[in-house]
Length: 240
Image (cartoon, rainbow, N blue to C red; front, top):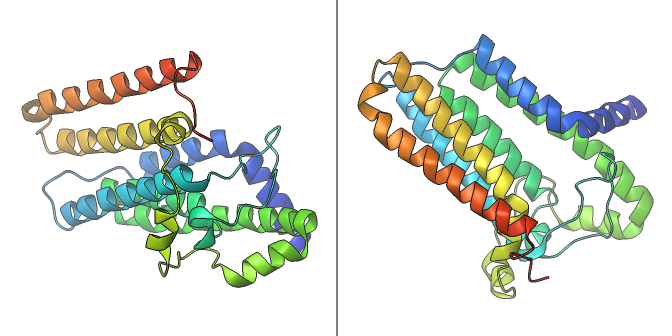
């Protein structure tokens, strides 16, 4: 069974860049957003925006302090070294925790209860399988050092004790955040904005809010284009 879980985890990791957007789109198709101005939909909306913000904040903090190269090589699980400092001293998978918060946040923004339940359970299961495969790979590569790391640091829920001290020991690398996170941040903002627009349309309120929606979209796209240009021309580089 463990070998089967490992195969599934590797397959999900390999296809995640295509699979995840498809899954989100499928969930929203079968469980579309509810109109804004309904209860408990508006409470779900506020909570969803909070989750997306928290997820992005966690990812930004993680990357700004001590980025981990675990994005894979040739779309396969890979790690250059065992990173145990920065936020990784408080949570073994902070980037994945951030991703989970963001995706569940999208579901809460939509306000569809069935979508919230199925999306939350589905993506938590997917990330658990990916982490299962990563843990096997890291155990085989780093051995006892990784096992000790697992003993000391929780897999999912961050340990907040000592976090302020950890942050104070680093010079926050804003260029690294911009270069490495601008795509995810752009996607998070645009999907959230799109869902809110969808909900406004369902409530026949989109026309009254068209200007702020369009202004927000233009600002997000402009910021994305500027950072991408600076990255491609190598005018924006990580301090590390």
